[in-house]
Image 1 (spheres, rainbow, N blue to C red):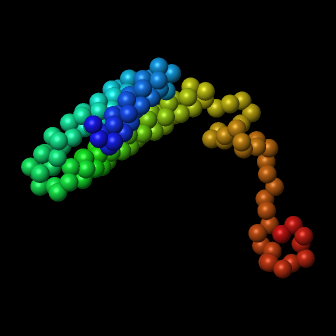
Image 2 (image 1 turned 90 degrees about the vertical axis):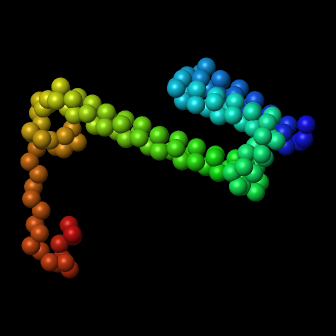
Image 3 (image 1 turned 60 degrees about the vertical axis):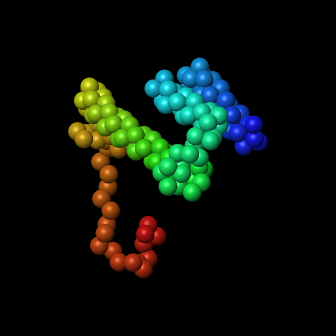
Length: 141
């Protein structure tokens, strides 16, 4: 077994152990855990079946097996990024809907003007004189 194969095997086993630990601590949902466990098993198989990767790369027309692995990894990561972006978009929509529902449930608060938020004062605010020009002796400007 070459040094590269040994490093790939150890890295994949560490990845699998890390995923199991993160799921155990409930920091990663089971759906994503299955995805990353599949990645770990795939890397483990790549380490064991390196001659198969080289033959597959020659069959596809790639000069070196590692180039094929990197190309597949990049495509995989792009798909994961798009998937996570869709998930974030759905969550943003849910947060917006929940914020609107909470606002409707709470209704206007006592002591606030309609449409006012908690941060806006309810007392009338003096209008600011906008007719004075810059450079007047008014220290308020």
